[in-house]
Length: 231
Ligand SMILES: [Zn+2]
Image (cartoon, rainbow, N blue to C red; front, side, top):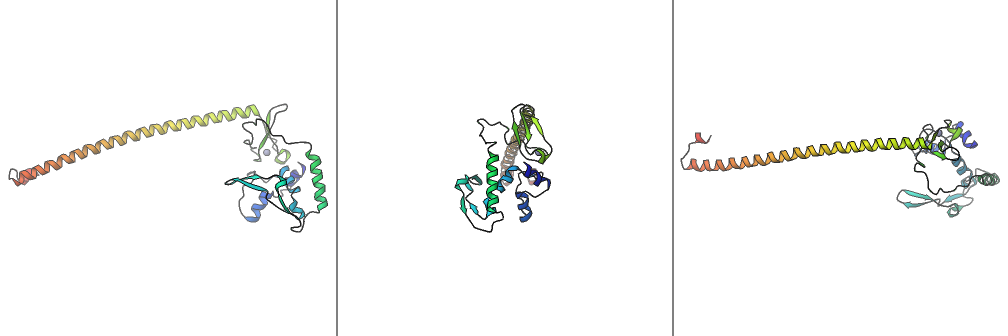
């Protein structure tokens, strides 16, 4: 956590922010709120062999359109001495050993049944995801710690309650919306039927007038009525 903390405090741009600055493009940053480093970003850089002159490719495989899967490190394709190194290979190796020694503390284990809100809770201060810790008290907390500085935490039970209440309100609003639309649709249907009926009556009247005019014309030809009578 220490290196990420120092880089964040000294406002060194994160790789994403740096890319945006350099290219003028707007790549989505993991945290939209501020430019903070995570320990994972630091580890990624420390383990990236591009700094000792290797060119690495085949890191990702496309699974579906616009969806990539990160390959296992053993699947990477490596071209050594591709460019001038930035970091001394011995120093790089020392870093790898240090990482391995530290890494033994926490081995990632896949949860059997992940929590429904996993990956969906974000810290309001820094914008990074919040993690769940349930050993003594079951809570969600901002894992950015001092880097974020908010030390945001919320009991899982309270969070679930808020989510359920909000969900209830939203679906109620959705139901109301649907009902309003149904009333509107019904009204439109009634108006349309009425208009159709009026049209039908008008057409009948027009037909009647046409026949009447024809017969009056016949009468006029036969001299039974005068033009004044017709008008
Ligand atoms: Zn935070």
